Image 1 (cartoon, rainbow, N blue to C red):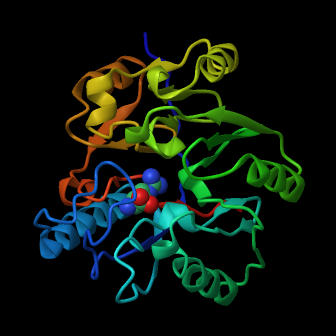
Image 2: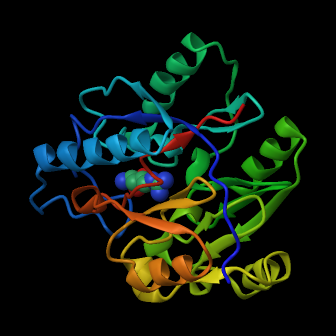
Length: 270
Ligand code: ARG
């Protein structure tokens, strides 16, 4: 018998992909020579937003800025815990200007924003998971940033090393299902990090490479509903068996930049 799951209403910050494009390559999914249909990206993104709202979540938007094609990936701009905002400092010079635009939004919404000293890509690599924060490193966010995050929030930070360039952000290899559990793709992590995850989450949902390649680990869960890429069929099946309700949302056009559902979604935790 699957356990009964309880959804919690969330507050999400997003940014319309009006200026979305693949103009540079900063991860292996990006091919600037390939055709990108910005209109389709906008359409798929609006479906995601409508789905969040249909399930009772609050969605707020940052105005997109021309010349910042990756700004749609709102998750990378910050991580918020108990009403505190820890901003971003992007690894790629192309993305650095995004931080200020998000900072402006947070300030107008009444938040103070901490500016990191080390490279740090928000919820892309920093994943609040109940009593601690899971923190990826290896490609983008640095170990120094992990220390800054722990010092800022006073919450234990568990460092995890990513080893496969296809899964360059923690949120491409792992997502939080609820306060107690996660789903992840073990091969994206170093042996030691895999062992850490095994100790912390003996009951985790383990995804296959196919699930990971379909961006199934870039999902958003409200504790019951899991907004998930439609290609991650084996993972969705496992989630159903565990009592979660997978809600497929297709962002195939945004995958051309190496982004998916979670990348587009910044959760504001109060
Ligand atoms: N093109 C973007 C980058 O490489 C994609 C970011 C995806 N965001 C995420 N949270 N994984 O930075």
